[in-house]
Amino acid sequence: MKFGLFSHLPWPEGTSPSQVIHEATEQLCLAEELGYFSSWFAEHHFSRYGIGSSSLVVLSNLAAQTRTIRLGTAVLVPPLHHPVHLAEDTATLDVVSGGRLDIGFGRGTANYEYTGYNVDPGESQERFQETIRIVEGLWTTPDFDYEGKYFSVNQANLVPPPLQEPHPPIYIAATRTVETLEYVVSTGHPLICGVVLDHDDGIDLCNRFVQMSAERGDNIPISRIPFFRYLHVAETEEEARRVAEPAISWTMDMTDWRRSINRGSEVNQKLEDFRRTSSRTGPSYEYLAEKRAIIGTPEQCVAKIREFQEQGIEYFGCNFDFGGMPQDLVLRSMKLFAQEVMPHFQ
Image (cartoon, rainbow, N blue to C red; front, side, top):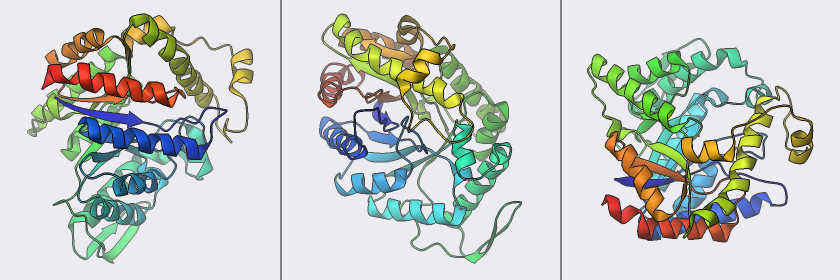
């Protein structure tokens, strides 16, 4: 079983962006030392929820400080990029990293991210598909030509080309939109399953993808799907809850807050003000710990991951760094997981 990391680079009040990036770098270097297979970073804009607005720049820095761990985007948001620039940046990063880049594409979540770029969210599906088509074409085709609804490309030759042939592995996210899932299947690339879905919904999505892929003749197995979960492991169940509960509460509250905003963003406001005035009732800690996260002792983590493995999951991603959890506790959890959970799946 392959184990990876995932982070959306959260920026809670009381921390600085430089601290967030420094700590993510420390986590990645430790992950390589501990034998994790990969580390994935999200793209978000205008929000404390995640400061990976230039995630490829972040990954370039991380590539320079590591040698073997694979580096992933989970996800890049193609409608917010010019496809030629995106193809150039990703190809260059693949070269810089020594061919360690994995590309996850997704449509994103917050409307205000589109609004900030002056992109109509109603165009997101078409822009999403067109941009990916152009990026993949530029990666693989000399004198590439394309005439689309939003972009035209005239005999472009990508310099440098990606190091991996024919191009970096592509994964595409889908959550609840049937049209997006159908598109993922049509590309012949694997699905990527994020932390926002409950366990059962995530497995159901993976199984639907596998069935549709088989019907199309690609037969991509569930074992090729990166499956991400919030995760915190500690010596005792009580300690794991004490650390994880405020962190996952911050994450869920930020998610609700972002969904309530269509213009501007929450970045210069205070979360406590939102909590006082909001009438929204999010899922309880007990629900999240059972349905969406893995929080507990090493034995409890092994048992839950074993359930996923029995469903066919063989690529498991851990979101250790969520909600502004103190760095020493994130690193402790990563070490404990590597020492007492991962060996059960070798």
